[in-house]
Image (tube, rainbow, N blue to C red; front, side, top):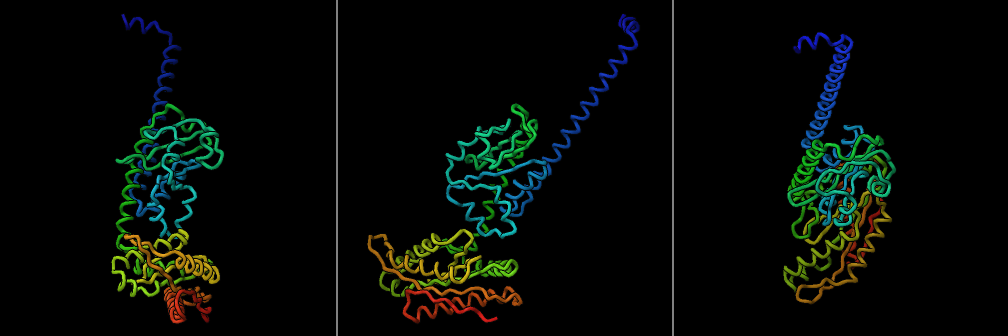
Length: 375
């Protein structure tokens, strides 16, 4: 009976149904190809995140790399950093890696930052809203956005913000499985990169003061000199020495001496920029590299440090105080591009150290600036 009914079906209807079926199959094929291509892109991006060699490269791949890979108009990253851990870890990132930081925000106010996002539990997709999204992307995109929370075991670590001029790119209610999985991978990679960087820096920092040690100074010195010579930037160095430190140890004990060094390190750090490199060079002596700082500016900074240290005695745990002064030697990088970077760096340290010796010989509690080096 079905056969008879089929035979009575007009040939035009059969052809119409065939065309509909072919169209449906072609549409399913296109959808399958699109999904396969999307999955491939997500897998490639996740592998790139997993393969990031260090924290700086990971952040670059989460921003500029994400934008290029998915052909987006904007990709910005907000990281919760209430104790400036990530900021400190990134302080040693070389200048060539620093461009990506234009798209990375390190946020110390966790509550204020989280309040800017619609959902801290799962991805949010939807149309552009000036009132909510302009502050996040720092420019008007229109179109649509995806806001992805980066969740770790102890809570949200930040948010990855993806923006497109296309209003159909990120649609509210759209399936977010791929995006949620990628955000999970990014959060794990971020946690691992931070932990690796912290372990790496353990061997490069002084346990008492928290400053970098002499080994790290020697590692960074050639890099900073090379950069200064390449771009024609100034580079200065300060050697800071706690005056009469042996007397402090003899009169108050080594515990008080450690407290003095720790307090002096904190005061130095408070006066420096993120790009400056403060190190405990040895004993009571500190060396500070000042990128893009000319000799006169370095001398002015040294004088300010010298005055501020002398103006505020060190407070002891028992309520007593210890007056402290410092002697500082300052030198600037020689203006000689023919000199190898390693040699120029060692000469810079030597001249600052000699200027420090002169300051101590002249009575301490003062700054001496080395004369310009002869080419």
